[in-house]
Image 1: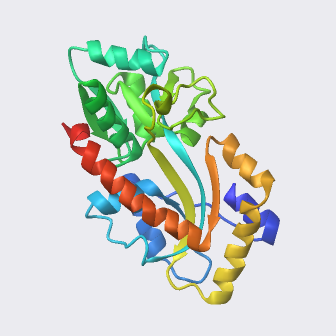
Image 2: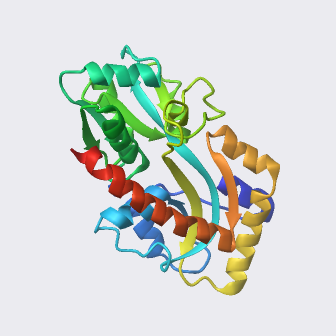
Length: 275
């Protein structure tokens, strides 16, 4: 969506590079190490920027000091994905199934402190579920493990999970947001079952620290046009996101507040998720 917008608005030719590994930390590290010339941009995701910094010593970048923040696009929950052979067809079904299980149910996430990990910690604490955490360096392997039965549940971001719905082996039983996602109207949200509970991921765009002012102004202006154009915000919503469209100081303030919020959630639910 963003690459297309930069091309349509400013005529930029944007190539996409997917750096996998370490739940986003490797890719984020590569952005931080790039040249601040406007040719290296990166998608910033809260799992790597906030949770990894709070919990993962291999995240050696400073999320606020080592990047020029350009925009914050949207937030989205995790989808709770199961094998299509599972008897659970809804969030409540899955919770009841987990309560009746004699052995721990294994759930996969993108790592400690991620939205899925903390959502599972909440389920353990609120519902007394017997769950075993399986952190995944790459979420794509989670679908393989659902298919072969070595995982019982996968927490995956809604945009990616939507892409997997065409595969009949998988089913989404719920989402970890306060309200239902427009792209998944039949999937019950956490907030409907447990009022006030929400575990989301945000996504934005950064560049290596030190962009020349004219370059920063040019890129941020184009992203500002994108954030204020309903055509692009609608594309984010269709992908399963809650559109934010923040640039400049408001984007940074949102991220600073998320550090505080995530630290509180880790303190409240992180230990329960790991037990």
